[in-house]
Image (cartoon, rainbow, N blue to C red):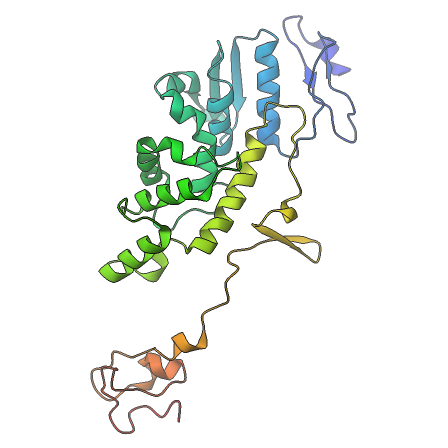
Length: 299
């Protein structure tokens, strides 16, 4: 702030408040700067500063960043305003400027209203994505059913999000995510890792996405009001560290392991036999037809 005296009159330096070393927000040109907040991330503070600048009459906002989370927040909060919003990224020699206000003009309003919820649900820095479904395929589904994610960040119901995931996996006719899993498994065209999550895991994922979206949707406010993440279903506190809860169900039951069969075509070669690796004895369901003495495991 002392060095700011050397700046030309057309410049304004603003310092946000709420930190240990900066208690109050200050400006070189104004006395009514409302930037004293409890934001923990720069992502949301950028939005707070941007909205404050637009409210002060600035007509062009340039944000130097290359983070997708910030881009989504800028489109949601700043582009509806009567100003230009540019996102600048890349090194100095290959710098690119993206006109987010132009992009926003091409998006229907119902997409922009639910963009933050969509991004939190389909994968971002603090939340996971769906195996085999990147942003592009998720975006195509979202364009057709944008209102199904409107509850994410607003404590909405699980059913709407579950319907969206059924659409995402190409099973819009299935009533629940469990029906989708069964349908895709029965078709045998996807590996287990490519199946959608079980309902329990999906509920936890939605809880994490809801928490993050709730923070983002308050990015234009000085103070973000959310409970501790350890009080939400998606996380737990262990030895002072926050851990993600992936599922509340028990691990794979021992009975399922007993159903392992090998595909050996003749007498098992121990190094390649799946039954041997699980310390199980071959059965008549195996490809080897349990030839006498073919597998000493499980004896």
